[in-house]
Length: 308
Image (cartoon, rainbow, N blue to C red; front, side, top):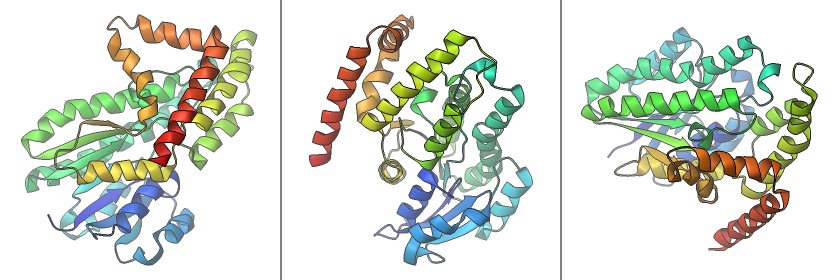
């Protein structure tokens, strides 16, 4: 297989930046990377990470996933409009009590996280079908498999992404187009830090006192512990993404964090949904010691895995 052109969205920071830089600096020089972002004024960190690959195996272009004209302009600028691999990474986060979220902000989140993906695929799919080749790689989340406390809207957007891709994958296969959902667990990025910083300053007057207390005194401290124990770096997720892109038979789903898999396995273990619901409820509200002990064990496993 020759050099493949990879279009990556959301490359100004975090996972998108790490994926673009990793592909561009590939030792076997298997990729030409089109790294895109909505605001080219934020290209500095990517240029630094790209190093010598800048303007050689990596070029930076403007693309706003919320704008069809921007997507078309970017794709039209490519020779023969050829994109061999799409890495849809652009996304926004949201946490907090539902009563404190406005419907307009929810719509904006879906416009980026779900409709952004739909716009990109709608633009690229006909060309991939014509060439009878392509790979659609979508940065999803374990929250596209399993809903998490105070992540109602974000999780809903990722569930939508998962359903969209699972449905599309059947048709795409007929045209020799592969589809993969990359599902990270907690990832320590500026994106996540900003979401949690905003959450700590969030106006909770729209909800009741007990819910506000649970959010501030239970959810936020627990989340920090989970990120400290299980959090991956963007570079680790990028490495997993490269493995998916270079696989002969790419999977439909790929969780990047093996230590988080027992959490998502609960959902498949009980078709009624009671097991994961009861487990998360008890971990959150009943058994603080069990929660902390579990994270302690996972921290040890993380260190052991790192030494191998």
